[in-house]
Image (cartoon, rainbow, N blue to C red; front, side, top):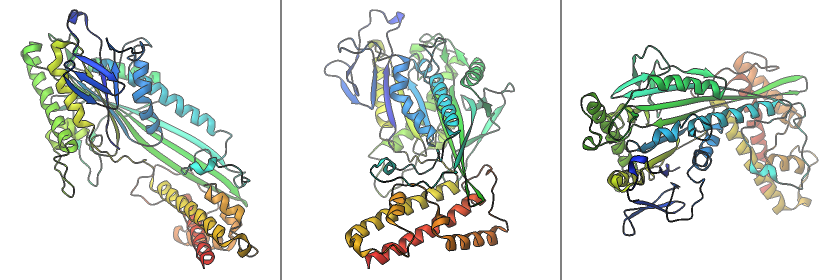
Length: 508
């Protein structure tokens, strides 16, 4: 998936009163800078006040920004994808206001809104799992919506249980120092790289478990007091560091069923990350009037943003990404780019919000920001749902069974119903239709001999009985599947083989 880019034009400040407007939003995803003959760009979203177009008065509110750009990212994160949102722009362009916002409900930024939405949906899913059947299957096929066929009642005794945990992390990059804003010690932290495509992690950073959005916002408020800010000629409360706020979400859904006095449990674990990156603004010394420490901070900020720009150019420049040729991406030039490795070109769905000023006095900075964002939209990420190894294998087997069932139905239709003998078979038209819809079928009742053999094989491998299973602990991708996943694996494999034999016999 491509990196999405949203442009947000902030309103005029009081100090800019009387300045001419240099930015014009020509349509919902197009923007022009420098007048009628100026440069024009196209992005996924363009948000902001417009003096010439008849724009909605609510088109630049915090709620509109969240609903239009950020809410789909929140939904993706709940589905198991990693997500990143980072705000970029010159100093004083409204990045921190966009991410964190003000103290009132109408002015709060996308992060508080995402927290409230996230917890509301997670709690709703937990409440919904009580008293429902098989509510959290990892294979929600669109074919389940087909009507006209009798629904097979096979999971009457299935019960689902949904639990979640949200952990919060708040890091600051001041110069080339990584600091933990949720810890009072403020010690310097190091970054550890993991091979095989793993994302770099900060060693020793705090991960605080939060149970409500209010608790998370209180921690963020305390951490914000420790963040380095300072006054310049362009911004009285300029951020002098980059901030990365991460929500680490773990969802565990277990489905238990009783089949012929045997209790079975299937556990699916999803782990996703939601990063909010508030980048310090790029600045020019002759305009900020910075001296001493403020000048040094500005140099460090620009160095980090330059390294980020080089990474974006390497990933998004079509001239550098030639087919069959591996492009070198300078992630290690800065700690900022090392921490954003997964967000740019990795396993994340990423949204960049570029904040610009409408004032003609800032036209050069706004034009550079738009060019910067224009390169970022060409970056291709490879986002996948992050589930444990057992759940991933079961999803693949279910998809295979569903595909084979559809193929079997297709062959039966070609052969004609009069040529099909169902007297000695278990895969009747009723069963195949249910499998093709993605519904669960009790394989033990369909294939008692095969299932018994599979159970014996499982017992010989694990050395334990399969009559019951406990809740699965945290499972990593490189670990073996849990006991209940093994049992389900054997059953799904046997059903898949039976379907393959059925398809071949019908084809003959």
